[in-house]
Image 1 (cartoon, helix red, strand yellow):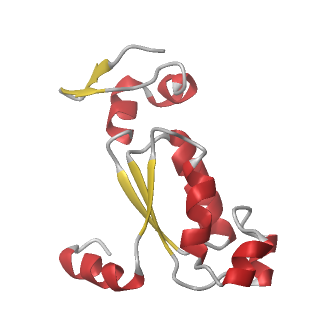
Image 2: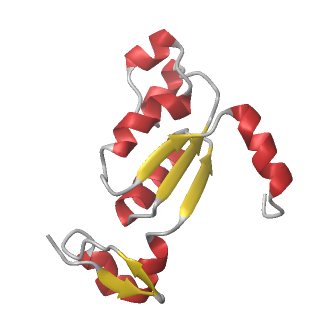
Length: 128
């Protein structure tokens, strides 16, 4: 296991073995910033699932998923996280995707943002 590295003036714990390719491409300072990011992905159809996967593999601190719509059969062709069981149970796309995506990188926290909380986030932030 790699030793923690110093980055951006704050101690950031980067697994240099796991993230060696990202460190080579982005540099240690940028990787130090990346591992502190919190990212919100709204919409967990095909593009949302692919973006979430790629972000989680890159290693931000947290990825928050938002999509309250229940899984449908047509979603199985685009969101690789979903199963027929999710469709039968009527689970939301975000909830159904969470566990699969969380298994991709143990260093990334994957959460689900309920629809009512998204309104609060929008009110607090000028960036949405």
